[in-house]
Length: 455
Image: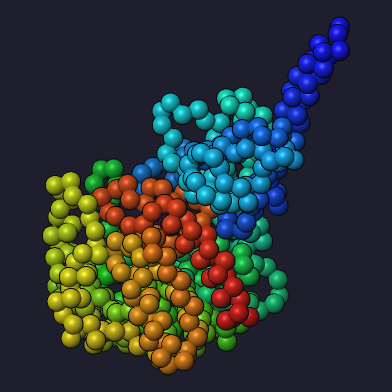
């Protein structure tokens, strides 16, 4: 063999050897609590190699249980490394540097998509694959756990559908009360309470409304028949009942109770905190600065009544304009944009807006706000800014985050798909990347706010 032939052969062997040594590293490990950061890196690659990272998982939603998938192509650096925290893909499901990109950019897989083995019973598992073209090089499975291993969840008999979640130990913990939105039922209690409890809080997920549902065969009865099935005159006193219950729990420090509310739950939380000085922190996600009209076919004249009450007395409220017509359009294949009747009602009744305004300047506790500028359910960005301005004029501590391109569905943590929020008739607004950014940046800011306010 000539020197030239030996050199060519050696170069070819060197080019091939690193492929076998390529590894996909996931830190801190194969299991994290959802929302806690993950770090993905490829090591041992050939410098300049084009490598594909693919993520797949099962997602359960109103559309059923389906596989989702994303992928991104990266170029290895001079050290043969790809760091997803600091490198942008050259093409793929997302475009910019984003450690969470593979997770939020997943879309429903098509019938022709090549999928790894996915366990439908483990919807919290994400399968990460490293490929060179179509050639599999490595695979890692990571679980985004819905709660920490030491979180215990119980169902208080005093509150239908409620969940009480806390970690073990003798120490008394600050508490949070979780209030979901207009979807009603127990969903927020089941999902948010254990997740927030994983951060060291005693959390009571508190349902307060349970409307009829809709299934494959038509209407379904309310999940929680003991709760109101129309959103009418929901009494804020329910929070005082929750406070009294929490004060009896041995692991709760009742002098440190905060409230976390999303959408209508944020309206609830702010309205209550303006009347209840024992609330020490308020997190209002996609909030309202006013109390709105009620709704529901089950209550007499629901469209002429308030959504909330205080000790049996209805609160002043802003009426909608064209609410029924907005929903009727779905029968003709039109999108439902709830913001339209709300904006029209607000514009048509300025005198009622002032009467219905939530007196946020009376909330002595610090307030956290998160709003989306493209929210198509209601103007959460504008209302968050109005709340922040009112409180600033009174010198009150407020954290206000507004994302101009985000929509209404930004109460998550940024590590789950955000790509299907507008696939149905009901439009939430927002771009998938902006919603993911609002979630991914808002979640750690929320946790920092709660630590500072309650600890």
